Image 1 (tube, rainbow, N blue to C red):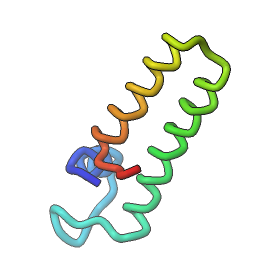
Image 2 (tube, rainbow, N blue to C red; image 1 turned 90 degrees about the vertical axis):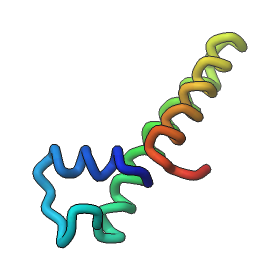
Image 3 (tube, helix red, strand yellow; image 1 turned 135 degrees about the vertical axis):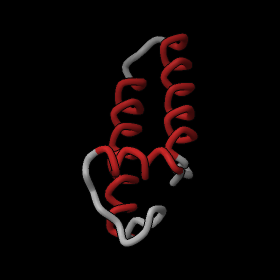
Image 4 (cartoon, rainbow, N blue to C red; image 1 turned 180 degrees about the vertical axis):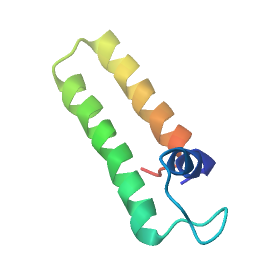
Length: 71
């Protein structure tokens, strides 16, 4: 996970023991949300044209990179 997850958690009002620490449960929760979004893209790409599917695959990679989630 990258700093974006921490920033969003702070915006949501979550409090942490230190400025840069999230518990393993909180990190896992954030990762699961990102993965659920990726799964929605993957399902949509199954029923799309080749060009549209390429765009969805690009978006999938961009989201994973943005949030620092490894495939």
